[in-house]
Image 1 (tube, rainbow, N blue to C red):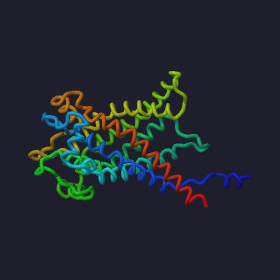
Image 2 (image 1 turned 180 degrees about the vertical axis):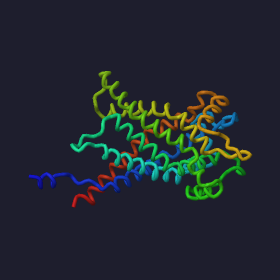
Image 3 (image 1 turned 90 degrees about the horizontal axis):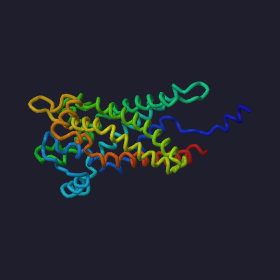
Image 4 (image 1 turned 60 degrees about the vertical axis):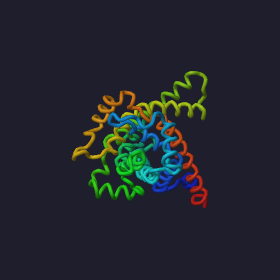
Length: 308
């Protein structure tokens, strides 16, 4: 009887393969949404330091980038975006899986909702710390095209960026802005979990929805809206800090709080949500595409390696 149960148990892919596929799925999704990341970063840096805004809207930013930098210009920083996914997503998935298994009871009872949220936030913050160097390179590479030629950093790819940053500014500069980067990861994980479950319950209680894919999609869109609104002020602080230069030996910003204070003072309160449209437009498709690619990789792995 016991041998029958063991043989009936479905085969699963090793942990290393799960982490690898998680990172690869995130990288594949990034190929499609990288232009939105570029536009979001440009919007957040537009009008910095009480200067005139370079871009009036996200669509104006896209048109300007295409006109001045060409079609390939909207994919500037792709190598950094891919490395960010390889480091951040793989680490986050690995930490989440390990903690989830550690906190699952001996009888197979999974952790409760609060514990899952804490695991998610811990995994997100750890992944963000590991992914910060790639994030710094991404911000700088996507920001370069808006600067005059004599002020551009001119990184050729993410590895060239990381080597030059460590050599020219010190190795610790690669973790510049890691606190707001980690804070954003915690806010995103917390906001997504809370808002998704609440949105889903609200839709079901309305009587117009059933617990199906349409309900899940609508709840995801509402959750994305809440998550974007909650995390953007932290995100703009991260972007400005990671892109800043030293002026007379002093940094442009002392901390994330200093960024927020200066943005509100010189650019207005609602400037904290600059780049809202591309940020929101990126959040949903990236998640959906990541899961699509992940499902396909798992399917083919099982078909070719576990079916024998």
